[in-house]
Length: 232
Image (cartoon, rainbow, N blue to C red; front, side, top):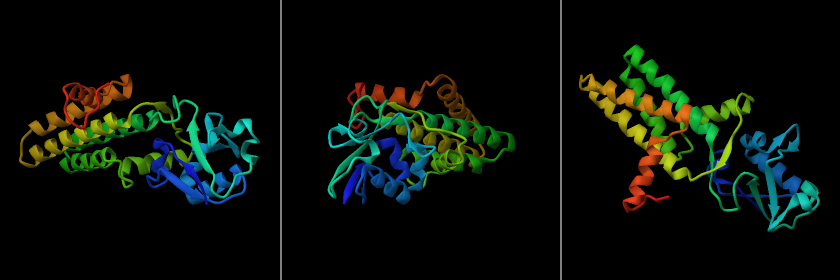
């Protein structure tokens, strides 16, 4: 069967599969088989039944736009790749900036609600959601909500060239601070809300100014030579 390589930000819609096996005699049939198996991908690849302008499909090393488009015939063992035009290169990692903004906005709303209602359990739930997002789990609640809004046409992706690891680390940092806040609140310490408000402030910085403190920390650790952190 032919195969289609999926760019990193879109793998959340394929169950984290980096490559999907499909059948079809043309590029278009292969793409139809892909979205039939993973319906959440459809709105990211097509609009009004046509391939989105920023989505490039490569057959081997050739852009199918310079062949016969989606009518390009393919062999049973063809290798196809989906490459957004803003990727910055075939192997450049991609980040969905809209998803990050959505996650930060939801974090802010839920934590403020937790503070107003004095609901430490909600703080814990946010910490769990951030942790699952940080480890790129297919069960991450924020991703479920984000996909649902995209399917309804209420949001659209915004892919940019970036390393996803610092952003995942930032999510894990937020999860850790929120978990600490929940623990302190459970023990009866008001300092727990201080931890929660630290996350709220940092999430606002990312939401409004695109300053990611967790990402900054990730790169500082890399510059210090800490193993597992890539300096930039």
